Length: 188
Image (tube, rainbow, N blue to C red; front, side, top):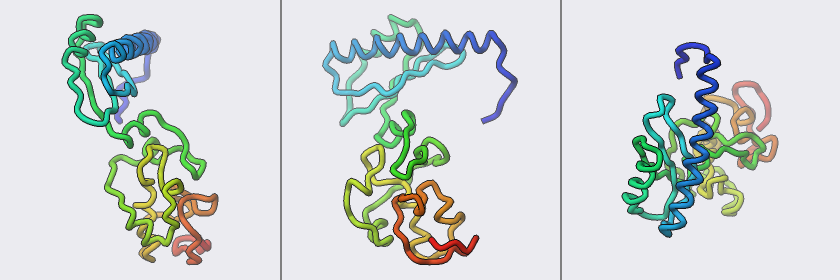
């Protein structure tokens, strides 16, 4: 992200007012969701810095007809409304949190895109196939199953396994494979 300039006092005050409006919009939207009985979970409300649009991020099992909800939101707040349905991994990225390794979630810190992850990746790494140990904060398979895979195959990895976000040395999702790291000589 490119920084245009340092935030002025006016910018900080404007952002503070926007945060208040986002909280107000969130409360109003939750009320209308309950009134209409919509099967959706509101995750976050964001207002563009220029104040021209409110973006409502939500999760739902299937498709939701929210046209009436959008009309009510638009008439209440007098701005453009965007409803964005997100998946479980996107929800974890927005909300943040900590993984079983004790570090901030990879998706909130450095992971930019979500690639497909399969149980075969855990099998190739000789991990126990216990669903509770293989599931991340989002309830899906942990993203680190994908980026730990090159180490498990014995290939050279871009970074050491013990320097990755799911540190094997501190009880991360990896198992002790008994190999020496090619970068630093540490046994992982």
